Length: 407
Image (cartoon, rainbow, N blue to C red; front, side, top):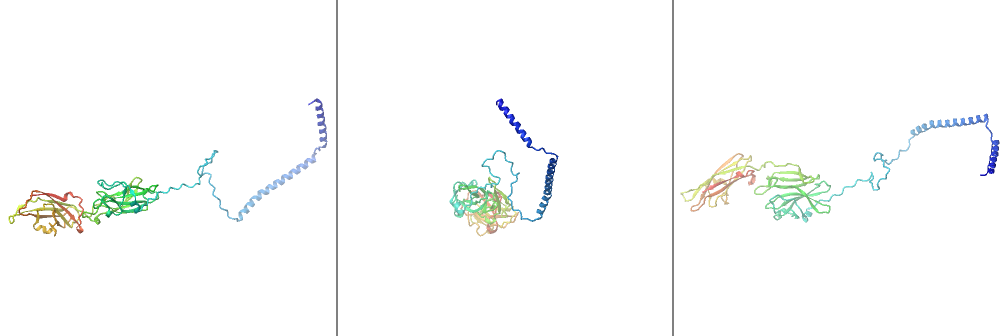
């Protein structure tokens, strides 16, 4: 900027100040007092309004409490802030499950309920039969439906029941099976199921017969709690032993995840009431000449003791002597009407015999004239009979017989 321009600008500012100062009125004492009074009135008015607000607010609130109003509408529950930790600044993954998402449902277990017809139509695998039964198949087995007509070595269905044995919510099948062998055969109860593909699979064996006890499975029952109940009997009928004399027990079995274990019922049998212990001893048969007709005669002395605590209706004696020797003498009159009828062996029925009692009998024998007899040995056996002529069980068979010599 030049010096001349600076002088002109200064003169302009000087004229401006002179003009403005002449227009401004400087307030005196009276003006100051008016301003103070105006400000004081505004302050008092503001204070009064505040006081009214403070006193009127609670009054309005209390009045509102006295008035009945419409009931509050239901409010959606708000999740507590303590239900989950405060989210961090980093965003959660998009696929994270919500706290209110439903629990996944349990997969439906395969239906293991198999009808008798379905079992007969399928090939199944069975647990091993007891040792000594090589004719009983166990792999890819076709089951027969009628045990009474099943062929030797054929597995047949005797009973079918149902229970949720593995606790998966679905029903499984339990079947009582018989392997036909002679007049009976071993038995076992087997549990079956289906896999996810619908194939029949074997869960395991529930119980099986044995050569000792139980020798017989008689009934089957599946319970709603998964227990498989089996009626077992100590002795299998046959050979003169009636089924009604067998002791029977209900025993319950449950699946442990690996095998079936007994969970209820007796675990053993007591002495069978249709049993006793006979002891048979005999003396040798020595033949001597009979001068009246040239035959040879003698007698076998047999002693029978009842060592058991059960009354025996009769005792059946068998003498395994050569057919050339015939019954002789009055003692055979007490042996029954069929004495000597079926030979060999000769049979004599005696009795009754009480517990701890005994019988001794002299059974005469005759060898016809001009009949040769080489010296030898023979067996004398005894067996106790109960009601109906059925044979009683003898837990000690070794003392039921004796060996004699004859000459």
